Image (cartoon, rainbow, N blue to C red; front, side, top):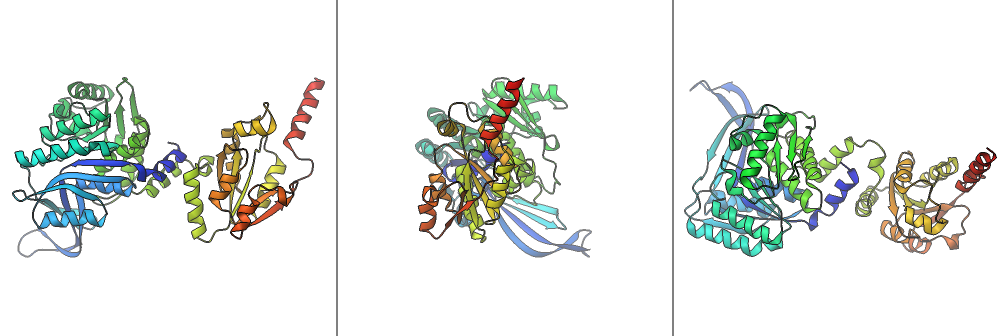
Length: 490
């Protein structure tokens, strides 16, 4: 995965609007110590130290989407009871829209209590409702979904088989989304996947895919057969089967299969990992990622989720750091505009002094390197604005650059003295300077102060311009002339 693309996704995550429809429940955790056996029966005694409530079921999908920075609403039904009120309170605490959560006095809000000691679950106690919705409440849900789907960029159905996602609710959601060409992503349950017919993507795990297809998955051939059976039954566009330690397999509507290996991590708890996968795929697709890239994003997120105990959320920073581990090279320094502005702002809050310089840097040579090292020494972080190929041609003629912008960016990012590189397409870096607001604007010593673009901007807020001397005789033009001279003699 491209680190810059992931960073850009999360920088714009607030523009994504997601609707989650599904079964809600409270996840209660009782954390304690188990150091003795009860004298009443041969069972462990757990001394409870801490109690915690978390959003469970479809609520965990919602919570992950909110943690990613997306705008998310939830549509569901809970009971008019204490658990229902506590669940609504959890959503409010996380500033999640609950206007489409309907309360049914005849329904009990599900609550799962997990007793955990020494990082292991001792027992789980379920108090839940599995009854299907009444006709009246089902009608309310269908009407609300049909009337509001147009407000969202992606629709997520999180089915925990607790009665909210009736065939009518599912059909209503898929039909409303189809009219607007909004993708519908489903985490399915049960064995009858025909009720999800027309969805964009299903995300079953291997066990669920086996049960739904009736085909034991033992190798790649049987995996393909199971996937084909599910996709045929549901008229599905795409299918993502999660396969635990074997990673994920994405089946596309053009017949292509993308196998994504798991990210090696220590596994503490797999509960809630499927919710994280669903949420990550949703933000990926809603942000314009392809299905393969969205699945890779989900694979990274799932690898982080299983390293946590209990139903937990994964943050953008955790994903970015995980992707960065695969890009311990020049990729990690090349930033898009929005991401760079955020990074620079964060560094300023830490008290770092930002130096900015810019140029074409075609045919990188020792003179460039010496100049950049001197510029870095003026502050704490050096941001380099690199002229794009188009702007180089406008400035230096149709035969330049000799090295394209991607190669130039990577060569520069490989230098220790450079912290961030950004490619810009304008003839001057004025817009970049105005947005970054560096403490120091560095330019070559061949400039006059009055000729430095952005000088007035930098000085207006107390910054300064520094002219850095070049190494004599070192220039791209000289190198080109020397090459022509030597090879023309041949």
